[in-house]
Amino acid sequence: MKALPLLLATVLTVASGLPPVARAAEPLIGGNVESLLEFARDRHPEFAAMRHEAAAATARVSPAGALPDPVFGVELRDFTNEIKGGSANVLPARVGATRYTINQSLPWFGKRDLKREIAAAGAGEAEGRAEATWADLAWQIKQTYAQHYLHLSSMQYGRENLQLLDQLAQIVQVRYAGGLVPQQDVIRAQTERTMLQSELAMLEGENEQAAARMHSLLGRPPTVRLLPPERLRPLPPAAQLAIGTLETRIVERNPRLAADAARIEGAEKTRELTYKNRYPDFNVGMASMQEGNRVASWDLMFEVNIPLQQESRRAQELEAERLLDAAKSRKAVTLNQMLAELAESLAALRAARRVEDLVGNSLLPQAELTLQSALTGYGTGKVDFATVLDAQRQIRKAKEDLVKARANQQMRLADIERVIGAEL
Image 1 (cartoon, rainbow, N blue to C red):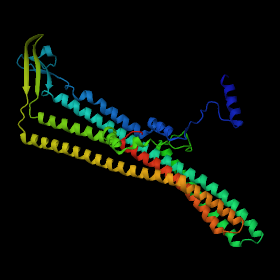
Image 2: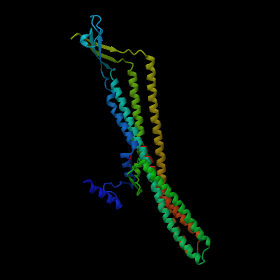
Image 3: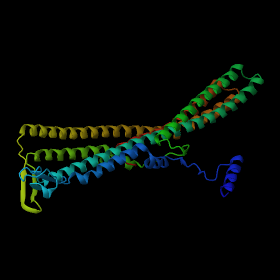
Image 4: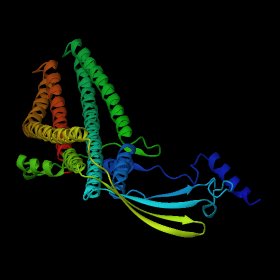
């Protein structure tokens, strides 16, 4: 009976078209790239998997240098009791004699420390791979965000131009009705408007693709809604973009280089361990002999393996040397690639900045003046409609070039941050 009021309340809530009270509001993220990066770092499944693998590698460090478990053994001698003339038995006190042994393997001095250091290097490499995964994911999010912002801005400018074309079409209709312009001007205005509508449709499709791509980069959260991009990140000051400073940060912070350095360290320790295999390992043990219900004697044992397979060990040492050389070469290749990408991204960033400065401070104001002049001239019959359309295209292209230059700067900044492995 207690459940009846709750059931009635639920039915009334659904019938009224209101969302159920228990239903939590869908969280909103986006609007800026920082919120997207924070969400992805906490919840993206691929990065989470890499973090778990790095944690697993760290957990392997401690047991890597541990001693192997000791071995305990029981040996029943004359359990058939043929010497005593009795029947077979498996109880220690009722056989001829029972021998108890316990053995412990002891590696050569320093081998356990080397194994622990090799495991630590592997953990460092796994951590570097995890951070490299995050750097790639963050780079994709920043790139997609900039493209999404570009599409939205282009759509906004396109709609503004569409309104301008509507105004031009009205002017043309009035002048055509008064017999001041040919019908060709009316047709050209309609054609230009249709072409712009087609471009807007394409931009809307690209915008939806960017939004879908962003959902994928965030791990496709089912209960999260994305806000459209509202602003771009401010660019860092020129002092932070000095190539010498960035090259130093690459060497210090790049996760791929960190993983390569950990791989080199692991290869060096593996080589040292391989050379230590020239020395023997030990085995110590203790044994006691039970006869009837008493311990008759105690034994102490010591064993050592004899490293006679020199040809096999020389091959293992050569393998370790070559793996170390390969790790060093791989790090050199990574560093060379990162420095080349940095130089290219800096050059592209500087070019985009120059474009923004030229378009924003020179080309766009000139295009606006040209359009105003063309509209005035067309109203007085001093210029033809083709001149007006050309001026309209110029101002539209200038605005698109301006937002493209800003988006390109964000993309190149994302390239630089991916190379150095940190935010600027």
